[in-house]
Length: 170
Image (cartoon, rainbow, N blue to C red; front, side, top):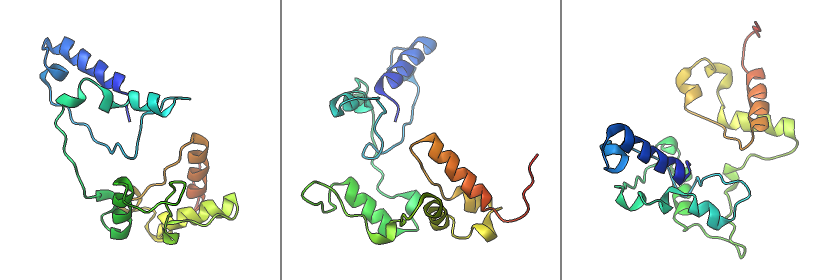
């Protein structure tokens, strides 16, 4: 999520460029996201500093029109996962004494060692890779997210090595 200062600077820039003192220079600006999932990245910050950097703490927040969407379009074909995410996001999923939730077994990819576990993860997300690797709809309809670029690189290398057919390196 963008820090509130970035959004406030866009507001100031549009006011200046448009010569209009209305929010965002009178332009309609659409934001999307789930504040329950993504907070702004503030290195070595406390939770208070992270919340302070969030758009919800901006002077613009109270003047914005907000819409709540409740259907997860990315997971619309997996109703159990969608329901689980909503329960977690709404604070309705049961927790243990330390506040941790239990992730259902069917949503967990077993870890043995790095190489086997990466391949297992890829097979879970791309189960028909051998037959549908060249289908844009198939490939763009799924994703593996990673927090660090070195993990992304490792996942990409392994995924590419699993593509069917002859390797063509130029």
